[in-house]
Length: 408
Image 1: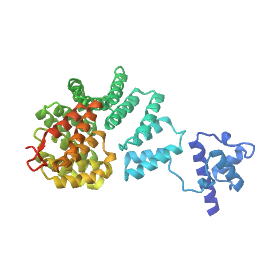
Image 2 (image 1 turned 120 degrees about the vertical axis):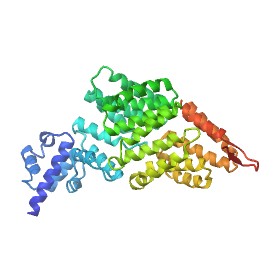
Image 3 (image 1 turned 90 degrees about the vertical axis):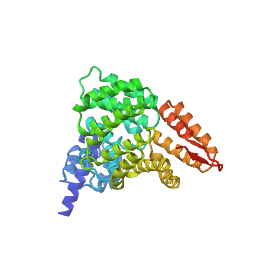
Image 4 (image 1 turned 30 degrees about the horizontal axis):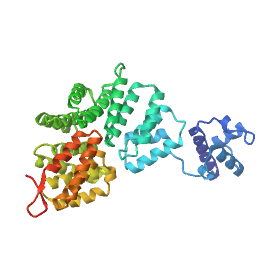
């Protein structure tokens, strides 16, 4: 019985390895192995000889031990499991990557879905997956999928600080669906990216026009995308100094979801709210603290290194504005451990904060560092971020004892 079961398992692994490489039984057979014999091996009715194992391993490009390893789940099984349930992001990503690489001949639509999930990582490593996703989108010939891929690339480029490239990608995505019958969610995903980029570039008139288009389709969107859309519209309003209107839209966004239904988006909405209120003049410190306090339990449970770094960075900026410089310094040191995971704009704010802390402590060389950071933002076209850094420098003045004080 044990030997028969081993034959069946060998046959299953052999069939999966063959199919994953897009080979037929005729392709795999040859002078050293007939097709009928190969068929009986796959069905488990014949015991493989050592010579057969070596031959098949060589033809398939795998070690002989591959036939003895536990059976790998198929790409379809992994994708389905991740769409219905996710446990550990690192483990999930590795399982999906292995399944994707093991089945190069899988259905194109299935590979597109796998690449979409692989490119959700948001730690800077998703670039190659996005390139592959764009290429596969063109092969599939579905405008909606291609537009989604381009919009996702725009969000990635924005996170990396490449605003001009991000805008071009989002504009191209919008142009590609103008004469197509696509779903409101596809349009919304493009407008989300475009409004965010135009806002950071300081192109408020264009951003306002596209934000109004996004607002028109909000009622047609699923709740999570509707919340993200409202969050983006609120950001655009607050950046444009329409604070009351922006706050109203932001409250609508946060009311869309609860912590139980979508804890990750719920948490990130509170990050977004805290970050936006840090930009108001004067910053709404009590409101910022409230949103971060609300988000903290979720960060502890499911945040991961990327979200934890962003959360600590927001906490550090709040502590600095409250005048708690020692606390801000300690939090800033903790952020430094994972600063490479921050989006470009958040990394620039973190660097600006560390320079501000040094300036407060009397290190006048930090002033030049802040000026360099502001100029870097300008050179990348991120004039809003540059303006934010220039303001942070202007808010610190020399103290009577040779150090510096934060202006009230």
